Length: 187
Image (cartoon, rainbow, N blue to C red; front, side, top):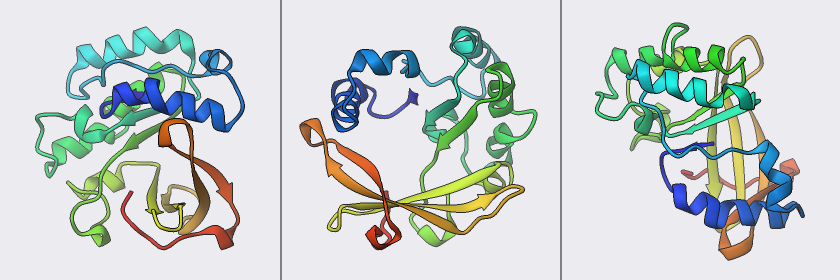
């Protein structure tokens, strides 16, 4: 997990809440989870190379970069140069190849108009293998993940979660039935 936002909260609140909800200890989670201190700038060949060299031995199955804006700090998010970082020869692909092909999840934000999907250059969505929109309904304590793009596969389906408060009030999700879904809202 490469948190560019809320790094301190992950270790102090997020991990304990997750462990409590799934009845495991932090020690049991440790072989499966690494929190990275700094998001590598996708525009820096050196930072991307150091990131790969540092975490190659871990052989992750999933790498989550939170957020694309942090990984591209200083760039114009409306530029095609920014969305090019997600192409087959961009920083994202270098990380994928360098770490042995894990699923790479890059968290991005919607613009002010949610109907326009992620903010920034339109090429972003064209350059990714899949896109999932996360929404929540605070009042109903539900979260919905909707697959809006799946290269070479089905899209436009949702998975639903119930959100319970974990340790320290941190939300923890559990898979819910379709009837457990809430209305759409920005997550």
